[in-house]
Image (cartoon, rainbow, N blue to C red; front, side):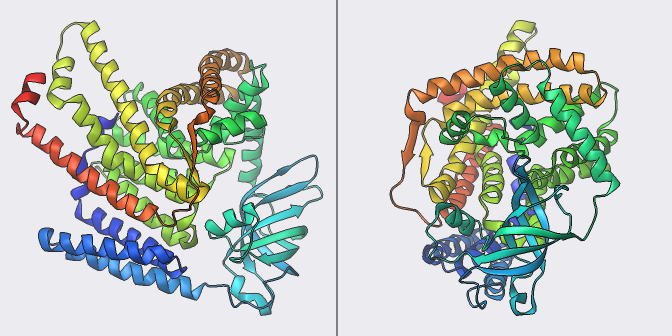
Length: 528
């Protein structure tokens, strides 16, 4: 798994320039919003960059970082809402919005989510283009994502003095508008035929995932992993997953998209299709899947990364994970610059960056390239299975370790706590979740063909790893989930943490290169 990640890809000059530009824009926006510690971190980052310029002739990297840093500061200054009149108190107004995400309760006819303001009264033109959290009452037609709506609502500016936890959470995610007591005045665009087809298949998906699972808790875990909908989970289950730092298995993101892409890639290999012929069907199937379940920001970021990765095969080029990662980040920032500081954005790209830099190299270091090759050259099947099993355990540990190390600084900054059991729980839960997703995708395929009897059989098999997941969480509850609260907020800690991850990954890569060239110590040679 991690053996296909080559750290030499980080020497790909255009990708490194794009990465420096993205990082410079992020630091620039962070400094522009007035976070004091960012200036201190910026001086450290510039010092490291200048030192690398002297040693490695990294002038393009520094230029890209500096220019995009200035662009980030300028973007913040041009979009500041502090001086917008009358937004410091609730004001009722007529707006036109386009929902980026929408959810709701059928029993109360209430829709809520995030939307982008398209039109506003002339006096409030400055809020056009900004994201707003809204709560709407609807009569019959449930508003869809991307559907243009005209609403009347009370708009409130989420200033720095707001003390409610949810408003502080929105502010940290750089959502500065809160619309309450809203009512839909007019639907300015109707649902397309494609949306109607997606709704029909969405119903089939939910029916297929419920077949054969009598336990409500198992149904909640199954539907949550495959569709991202958590309404079937009990309050106790939600608290357990959130407290242990494993709630990411219910957010359709890179983990889910990667597992589903591997499933269909493996399925198409059965028909002896070349890598080039497999690329386009995988991209199309993932697009249909996300359209049916309802795309989220994290799933779309992962999808863009997969598109870049498989597009290389379409043009007969070698796929580069690091290049796909940086290009995806650049595209997302160009489309939605204000989402750069959302928790999901930083978690998505921060964790993947940690896996690429630390996880891949640590896996090669622990496996020992020559040791692994010797296992794979054994003639007996049992010895080959032993070698592959050991390598799989090490790969899973490295992924869990790198993801946890990368996510802890973000968890401390945004949530004020972290769990020291996260690495161990992810080591156990991630492989089990992969099995559930594999079986769940098979169940969705059968449900799309109306073969619900086989869906029930597949779901009963999936109930085994789901029961193991629930049992693991019950055991962790006895230790209080290992939750550690941080009394003092460490603002902007993610900036030096990303730099530290890159430095650690670079040093691990040097050690791995030494092993490849035969420069390891005599003691290591004896062990290998």
